[in-house]
Length: 123
Image (tube, rainbow, N blue to C red):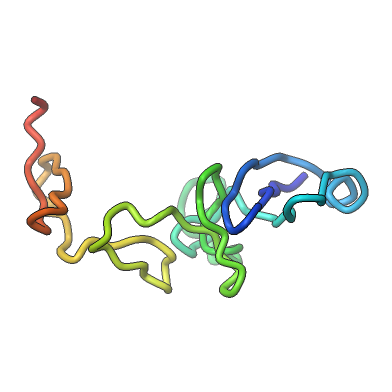
């Protein structure tokens, strides 16, 4: 069994587990297309059952989920842009902030108005 994403106008509207035969012969193709996606692909890296990169072939950048983008030109899935200032890394197919989040064990949220990370205090 494989995972397939139903894509309409570049957006994923459904993800199912099915055999290729079902997609080819029984799935509704009238308003979109079905594109295979891999549960083991994240940030353009293939992961094994132990959740570690295993050198396998990454399929279409990221695992598809409802609401994500399917870029037909590049044949990849990725999240919608979270903030206008963030840039899509076309190697990992992951959005990156203009400045990296601090790595000091604290929680942060992105402040788009000021374009920097603000410590999250829980309030």
